[in-house]
Image 1 (tube, rainbow, N blue to C red):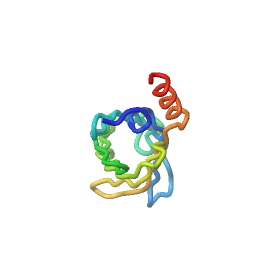
Image 2 (image 1 turned 90 degrees about the vertical axis):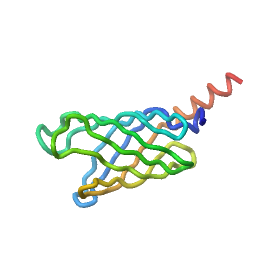
Image 3 (image 1 turned 120 degrees about the horizontal axis):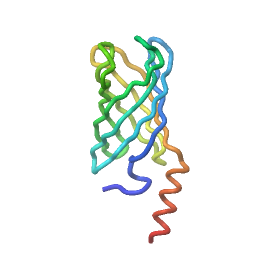
Length: 132
């Protein structure tokens, strides 16, 4: 099991972009990694439908194998335009970024980027070294 900076557990700031529309939406993801399993939640502003700007909530469930990260985001009570979205990306060497593509099974795709503060990673390393 990964610990410290190797583990993806934490809060990640994200941005996903629509390929066809050329616009981006920010989101916040809370990841929990246990073994190779990822779970957690995401919240983001509604970018279409009514009311625009309302906060949408989703759960996520996926996995990580080395630097490959994948998960399914499933919206909760968001209406008929929202369903599940598949994310597949690669973790950066310093474990602070995940970059990749998202796809909607019924059509639509784009890119995403998730960033975890390097400061949080450094703090984890510092705590780990103090405990030793």
